[in-house]
Structure formats: C-alpha cells, structure tokens
Length: 331
Image (cartoon, rainbow, N blue to C red; front, side, top):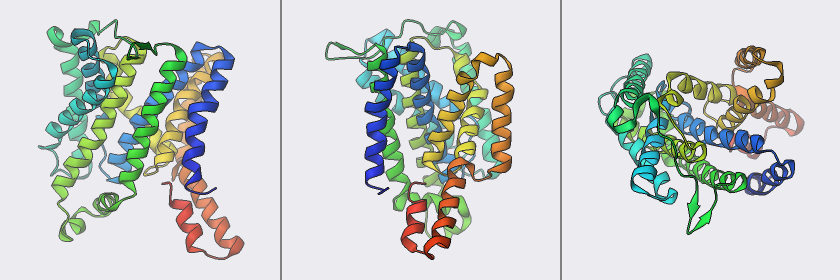
C-alpha cells in the first residue's frame, strides 16, 4: 500500500469504521476501552519520541501526564475554561514542567538520566498528593466537565470518541513529521552517539531540552483528554507504575517505531479488558505476553514485521532501495 494512501486509510478507519462498529454494538464499555487506548497511544507515542527516537530513557513520564490532567481539570472546574483551550494549555503546562526538570538533568547520560527522571516523577507525584490546598490531594478533583464546544454537547460516547480520535490523529501526525525530518535526523544522531553529534555541531544540551519539552507537551495533552473523559482524577492515576506501563508499550510494539508505540498501547489496554472473564489470572497472561514478546521479538511487534517484509522483498525480487525505504518509512 502506498505511503500516501496508508494515513488516509488509518484516519478513515479510526474516524468512521471503528465508531460505526462501536455505535452498532451499543456498548458504552467498548467506547470507554477505545477512548482509553487512544489516550495511551498519544502517551506512548510521546515517550517513544524521547526514548525511541532520541535515546533518552525516561522513567517519570506519567508525572507530566498528570501535570496536563491537573492543569486541564483546574482550568475547567475553577475558571470555566472550555476544552478547546484546556487541552493545549495543559500541554503547555506539562512542557514547562518538562523544561524545568530537564534543565538540571540534561548533562546526565545513560542510567543516570533515567534515575533522575524517576526521581522527578516521584517528586511531582508527591506534590500532587500532598499539595491539598491546590490539588485537593488524595481526594482528587471531581465533576470535571466533558467536551462542549459552541453550545454543542459532545459528552456522549460517540462525541467523546471523535474528539479524542481527532486529537490523537493530529498528535501522531505531528510526531511523525518531526521524526521524519532533519530535526529527527539530529535526534537519531543524539541517540546513536551524543559525543559524535556534539562534534558535528549539534547542540546536544539544547536538543535534549527541546525533545523533552515536545514529548511532555503531548503527554500533557493526553492527560487533559483523560481528565475530560473520566470526569475525575486523583494522584493515583499518575504513579510510577503508569510510567512503566507506557514504557512497556513502546518496547512491546517496537522501540523507535511510531506505529509500534500505537500497537503496543492498543495491545496492552485492550488485552487485559478482553481477558476479564478469566478473573485475576488475566494479569498473569498479560505478563506472559509481555515477557515472551520481548524475549522472542526483541525488535517489537512492528519492528519484527518490518524486518520480515524487508527480507521477503530482498529475496523475492532482488534488493531494491525503494522496497527498503518503504519498509522503514513508517518507523
């Protein structure tokens, strides 16, 4: 399939086919699962931009997801700001938080940077939990308004799904364009060898700060969507475990691959829900799927499929540069 046609097919599937099937099922539960999967797809794609593309292992990404959720919730409940403004403002708040965290940690490398992000994530979670006068602490923020624009109520299942789907597609498109640009080439140079990138004239410290701010912006957008669609948030939604879950999504799907991040998010959100009939055993099954996918498919689900297609094309009709480009073009 042509690379130009594929995005259109994906958009039509997400905006037309899937909601039509969900509407026909008449199940609000399936809508809720689909909305959650799309929100985590944005979150996984944003972490993939840091860890997969730029090579910076972040273990506190859920904290910026939480900053976005709290920013949107406070703006909507205390100041009556509509969601058309709370979503970008939540992203800006998370990006500012990311820059403030990045400034003292950007010169750290490898596991030291990862531990620093883990520590900052715990600091932010502790702040959300204990700053009772501002965040209501463990009581959380209830009665967060859903989507409404120009007097049109979009709080129903279908309306909420379409809003989240549009924001998700826009977010993925922006991240895809950034990844496949000269800016993305600089990020990949940073990932492969930061000292070599520095010697070629790339401002490594500034680049790390920028990629962190961009990724945190989209994490904040995902948090705003979560706040508006659930109607209630608490610090427990943004713990360290959420960061590890999102990291597992991009590893299972394929580290460095944007479609892989989306596939991993959908798999790890939908699979536990599909296995609910088996009770608590479902988490053992999900754990086994994660373990064996990483053990047997080290490149991730999307990465292994891309590699297999590349091998087939090279052996089937000789090595073709166009085939190689096509196989990796959506990474």
